[in-house]
Length: 236
Image (cartoon, rainbow, N blue to C red; front, side, top):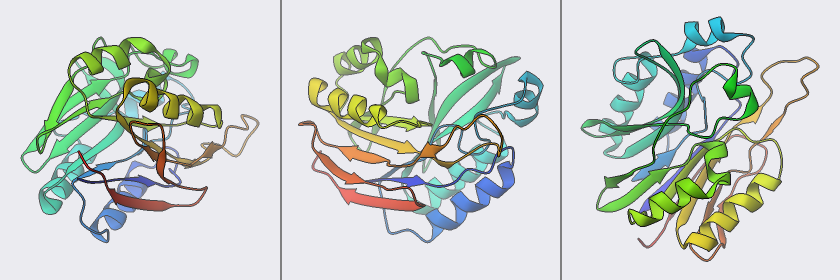
């Protein structure tokens, strides 16, 4: 199976600019079966207030980002997975959208909210696997992978590849990702973003270093701190 990630410098609160970056990169890419994008990849993540999230969040079936990803998935005959800000039934979620050639495959809503998430979003409630070309795929959205409950539930469901769309700043996250793959005997693909949301005193800088790890905990591919789209073959 040809799997990969796209890491890039997300422009804060500029969804159309970010969609253009995604569109251009994926249309120029080599063939793939499964591609992962970072968490909150069309908006950035360090929002000024809840009202800003309301203005940027989308319906994940008919919103502009969803429609773009569905179109790209159809054109590429592939599964494309991306972290997005979701508005659903009056609630805001930090979510992951899974799309395939036939449209939306599913939505995972982040269960374990980081402190900044808790100011803007409500948590999701469950973990589940999806069938992609006969392979069982599960999602743990960024901080979700730090906790055993999601890993154990997905493992019980026979997961083969865990997707980890992320916004991480420290290399300790890399160790957590590799440990999760090894301890649970699964592939893990993590897509992390680059850049900063604000040129101000927050000092939060996202480090890229997206990676693909095999069930023994061996890193098969890893990005650096530049924009990259990486695709490799894995035997699943």
